[in-house]
Length: 168
Image (cartoon, rainbow, N blue to C red; front, top):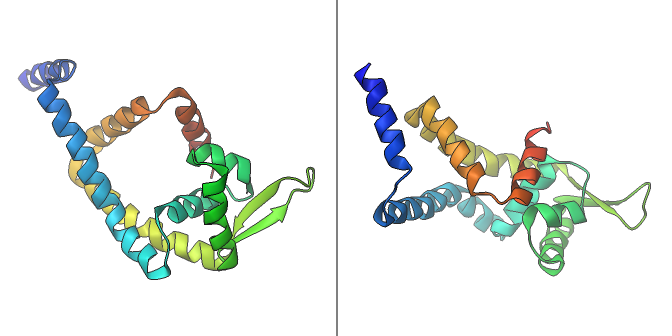
């Protein structure tokens, strides 16, 4: 019983974080992101790619046939920046761009088998790191972490995220 009361007090204290506690949280996010991207960065370097390529490959895999415009919305980058990334992925045989059947102006993006293999390699590295961290932290921490991340998203990003969660 005391543990439950203690947890309530700890939870209540989180509502009144000091600037120092918030700074430590910000720094933890920076270092966690560095760890989260370290393994994929090494793999990408071997292929001559960067994080923008990783994000594009990830979301094309997540939503096969997605349009260039949808990918622009998800990634929040300029058309010029995305075109540069897609051009290299297409030229290297990792992504296929198909003309839309209903609207010929649309381009639908699909990973080729080589692109799918790269995506699996990148994602497995990140899944292994997340799996280990989640296992160590426990289910309550995992649920809290997800809630915190979702609350950090703006409404438009949260809507895009929720649409992805409903997919395969």
